[in-house]
Every structure is written in structure tokens, then in C-alpha cells.
Amino acid sequence: MSARALLIGLTATLSLTSAATALAQDLGQPGPFAAGFRTVNVTRAAGTTFTARMWYPAPTATANAPFDTAARPAPVVVFGHGFLQTVDRYQSTLAHLATQGFIVIASDSEGSLFPSHQNFANDLSRCFTFVEQQNALASSFLFANADTARYGIAGHSMGGGSALLAASTDPRIDAVATLAAAETNPSATAAIAAVSAPVVLIAGTQDTIVSAAAVTQPMFNAARPVKQYVRIDGAFHCGFEDVSTFGCDSGSMPRATQLAATRRMLTRWFRFYLMQDSTLTPQVWPFVGDSAVGFSGFTSSGISLGTVDTIFDIRQGGTATVQLTVTNSSPRAQTILLSGSAPLLGSLTIDPPVTPMLAPGETAVIAATIRADLTATRFHLSPRVIAVSGHDGLSMTDRAIIVYVQCAADFDVDGSVTPDDLADFIAAYFSPSPQSPSADFNLDGVTDPDDLADFIARYFSPC
Image 1: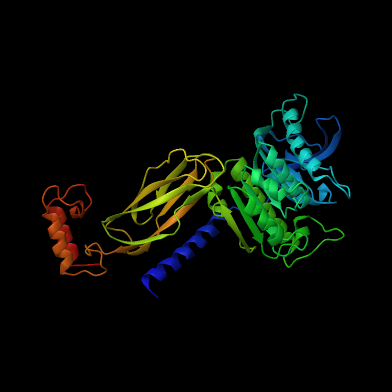
Image 2: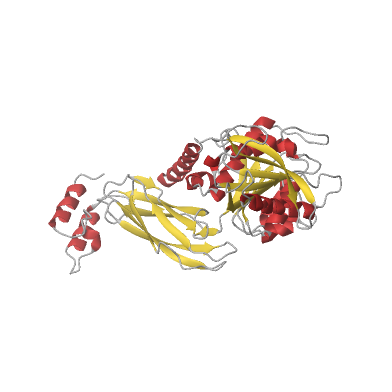
């Protein structure tokens, strides 16, 4: 196996190891709060009402428990149930979000044989208005407890499609997550193109009711970044519910495993975008599964950073610069924040570190300059350029720059130490003023006899 092939394989292995480390925090387990619950009446703009179930952070997991003020201000997540399904079939997932510090409200409406998807979407949006009203009402248990600037929406099947309808017209929504979202009337696939909030579409590979290939994939294709599409291997349509009903399907994945994976994914997404939990960045960008669940999927953060990884040689003590094109592929204008990471190598400098404001589709060119210390690990390293959305400060992408590190005495970086290297260094050292920066062998900022002595010592005892 060549050194370059070994490099690429080891880089992939290290990436998987980092992903496993990031999953040490199991978001599938309950959070620090108990999940109180109650039934509420929500009034529509027209004056009619519907009931909804609420789960929220509380001191005890009991009906009508008081709000645990340690969770304030708590972000709000509205959830839509599936066709002919009741809200209590999702209790384990919705209560779990409450233990993680979210206020969760799920509409009971449109549970008939002939539901209106648009009316259901309207009711889901109305749930946010209900929370806003209760948050401002001194006599309400929600008074001053909700974060009315952080709204998420989720749903299963019909409820997932209706959640997309709601998110396409409600600018208050900051994050969207769907579970096997069904096509609706009006079309959720058409509506998702107008959703500006980050959206994750979660589906099962063995879903026989809402096909991931026929339904979820086209939705993802129609969506604008920021977006993710995650397929859980062996997951089935009714596996997103606590129990199955008549007409349900089945899959090879145990229900408990699928529900645990669902809890992790929803908690991760909403904590990241609604609680601004940047510690979860390694799990969200790129999306990371867990050891109990196989998955595949596609992501688009709204930022494109180059098209291919760059592989080049650099000697210990040397520098190299690569030009990368940054593209804003999101639907909104934004700046893009850039940084670099070069562990065990030296330094990675980005110029400029912040792009100008880029319109959708607009590009900027950055220079990534790498310096390899004299002590840099030989053979190969993978410094990374990291690009973060200036809009939300969270959505990101990164690009590995594959570097093959040569011995410091290999001055001409041809893979071997020969008399040519000594001759080239001496020529650089004695070049007319200003002397070649490459002759500053010890990287102390000046070219002096110490550099000549250090190079000759390294030349006669090469790596």
C-alpha cells in the first residue's frame, strides 16, 4: 500500500473514532428534569377550540405538576401526530424532550378519517400562539417560563407533512424535524421549498407505508439548505410510535432500539438549534448515528467549501498555500466564518477569516496557508478548514487538506535527501538580500548562521 493510500485510509479511521467519542453523551437517556404533563384547550383565531397535550420540565412526572423554573426559559417544540393516531402513542418521545428542558405541545385535532392537512398545519402553528399567550399571562403555569424566541416543530407521517406546511408559512419556527413525513394535500414536498429553518428528515429503510425512496428523498431534494436526510437501517413506519395499531407495518429493528435512536436524533437537533448547544457540533455536522443503529443519509449545511480534498507535499519547516472556494448555497445572504485546525502539524492560517456578505449562490476565495513545524509528525496529517454560517453560528462544513510531510533535510521536497538539497539550501541562504524565507530553517523569523548550522546538522543525520 502506498503512503498516500495509507494516509487516506487512516484519515477515515480517525474520523470514525472522533465520531464515536462525540457520542459519549447519550441523549437517548432522560435529561435532568421530570416530565410533567397536562391537557390544554387552544383557541383558534376564529374562536373555535381544540385540545392539546403538553409535556414540560417539572419537579415530578405527574399530571398538572408545576413548571420547574430551573429550565426557564425553555424552548418550545410543537408535534403533529400521524393519520388516525392519538398523541399518547408518542408519549415516550415527547416526554423525553421535556426531560431535556423543552416545552412540548401536541395537538389532538384532525384525528378523523378525513382530516384536513392544512387545518392541522394551522393548528400546529396556533400552538405556538397559545404558548406565547400563556407565557405572558400572570395566572398561567407557563408564565415567563417559555423561550418564545426559540421554536421547533416536529411530526410523524401526516403530522410530519403538516409540520412542513406550517414551517413554510410560519417565520417563528427555527428548526424542523420529521419522522417518516407523508405527502399531504397541499403538497408537503412543494411546501418544503419555502421552509427557511434548518430541517432534518428522518425515515426508516423498511417503512412500507411512507417510502423513504419515493417520498422522503424527493422532499429532501426539494428542500433548501440547511437540510439533512437520515435513513435508519431496519426502521419501520410505526416504529416511531410506542405501540402499533391496525394496519401498521414492521421492520427488523426492535421498536425500543428505533425509539431510542429517534430520541437521540430529535434531542440532538433541537438542542443544537434551539438551545444553541455548540458542543453537539461534531454530532450534527456531519450527522452522526450511534453504535446501536446503522444509518445513511445526505446533508447540506448551506455552505460549500471547495470540491475535492487537496493533497500536496510539504517539508518539515516549510509552508504551502492552497486556494479554496467558499460558496453560500443557503437561501439567505450570509457571511461565512472560517478557521483552521492543524494538530501535530504546525499552524493553519485562513485569509480572510470572514467572507464578505455573500448572496445565495455567491462565492469567495480564501487562502489556507499551512506551516509544518520542524517537529511535525512525518508522513501524513489532515489539517482542516472549518466554515461556519454567520447567520446562525452553528451550521457548518469542513474540508480536509491532505498533507504528506517530508523530512526537513529534503529541501526540494522530492521524497529523498540528496546533495541537491544541500546545494539548494546553500543557494537560498546566500541569495541576494532579501534572503529567501525558506532559508529561515529554524523558523525564528530571521535568516542567520544558526539556520545554516541547523540545516547541515539535519542533512547529515536525516529523518
